[in-house]
Amino acid sequence: MATYDYTARDLSGNTVVGAYDDISSVALLRQELEKMGYALVKARRRKNQTQRPGKVKQAEVVPFIYKFAQMYSAGLSITRSLEVLQEQSENPAFGSLIADIRHDIENGLSLEKAFGKHSGVFSDFFCGMLEAGESGGKLSEALEMSAVYLEKQMDIRRKVRAAFTYPIVVGAVCFMVVGGLLAFVVPIFSKLYRQLRVPLPGPTQALVILSSLLRGYWWAIPIVLAAITAVLWRLLKNPAVRAWWDNFKLNMPVLGKVNRMTVASNFTRTFGMLTSVGVSPIRALDVAAVVAHNKKLTEIAKELQEVVNRGSSIGAALKKHDIFPPMIVQLALSGEEVGQVAQMLNKGADFLDKDIDRTLNALVLKLEPALTVLMGGIVGFILMSVYLPMFDYMQHLE
Image (tube, rainbow, N blue to C red):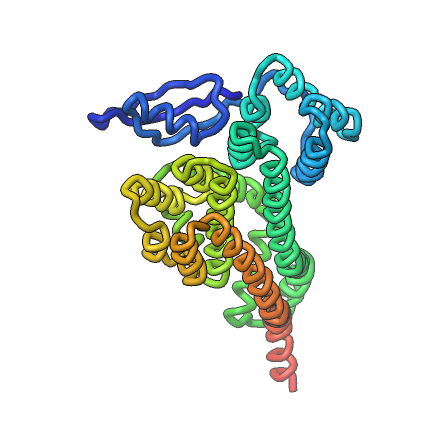
């Protein structure tokens, strides 16, 4: 469990600031505050001062969950399974964390609360699956589904990183080449042209000025970058700015389509998997909104909760938002007709993942030649600007 500092509003619109102890997620915090008549505005989890040093990577969590599911399915008790996994862990920090979880369970804590104390490692989705699996007698199924879900999430992130590795490398090389030309090549020619009293055309003058600024004030670059980063980080803490940024990411050129498919996949798969193991639709929507990491999806989740409370069609509600492709909407509508919404949404998320993969591959194929041409154009412009006065001077001598 963890402590959250929160800002909320009461029924009169007044701001209320406080802290809530022993709660495992923002979704649960929102529910507790709503019972008190407050609407959550923002929340921040306090860092655990007693947490042991070391980092647990998500790449370690997925195999852990798979092994936990296999051992429990084979008949080992929960505590015995955790004891074996603790002994097998090659990461001391993870082994210590597993020991803490086992100790809490032996002292009477539920699985959801024991794992929820380590929310930096185990997500709200996983804790929700544990709660549903434990209470509904489907723990083994919940563990296996959680591992599959988290593995798919990691796979998508890995593909996104791989897709943009080449553009980042090309951009870095271009930056270094341009920086080297401005810092070392342009000053040599600038000095030569001053000695020869050669008039400089506009592009060359601009390069000389830029080169002088770079050589004289290079130390200001990291300061400016740090200041810009700090300002942007501060701005993104503002709810209105954050909402604008989240909406922009869904509609930005080139990457907007990928972002829409990614958040739609995360949202639908989270909702589908949680409801399939017995989590209530209202709670599942809360967790799905948190997992999506987008304010727009939070608003959609609240709207869908109202739809569920009224007993209306989820598929019809999804149709109002272009974030969800027509395929997802049709699968949701079909699922409602046959009573298999969760299964249909999970299938839809699988289709979306394949579309994401195809879209990323197509994007990379387009970016590679475009970046190569752009890099060549920038370097060519610099070299042309450097040598242009020399050509003029040679023609003048002739």
